[in-house]
Length: 249
Image 1 (cartoon, rainbow, N blue to C red):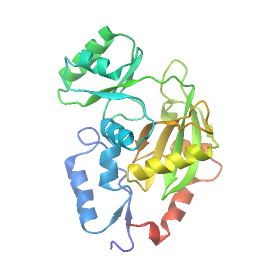
Image 2: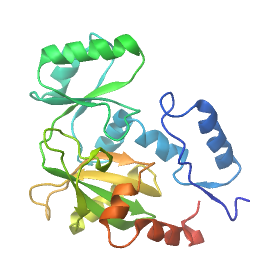
Image 3: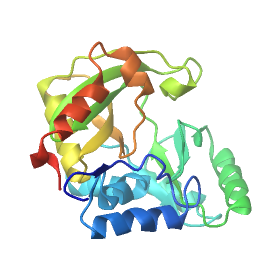
Image 4: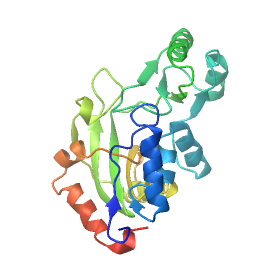
């Protein structure tokens, strides 16, 4: 019954990678039938494409790393010129990365050419992007639910790596957001049309006055790392929030 049922499709991964069209269509049917989905497929579609996320962010004045899509195997020179930055840069799949796997640091044009050619040799239609590299010692995962901050954790970048995924071994601890970081996290969640979103930030040098960089918005976030790092269970707060029927569709 749509009036007393919430659906959180944890198995709805990325089409062609970790999910099939049949799963997507099933959730779409639930939406047509009036069920509340956490998150909606509209939000899911934005968040599972890093390039579409970039477009949405730039159209809404959200700070985010410069991003350029790769159109084909010989597109490296054009894309790098459009990025307007120096090496190193980040090369990643626009969709389908899991727990940081699929994120590569590129140090030279020669490496960029070779990597793009190899990736597209094995999957001609894999959407890939390049991004400017923003050096940082840590990033922040903020969980936003129904317009409220549930919690935030600081994730230290793994030594010798550029990734900070807790599932890959990164250390995490509770983090106190500034008012600007909190308000921006809520605005980002609204921009990607989400009810429950994991917002990944790189804080600015002047955290009180400068907006952070948002590196990703996750519509199907994991809770393992944040459950361990926070004193109060975020899962309990999320479930409590959805007890309020005003937060349903």
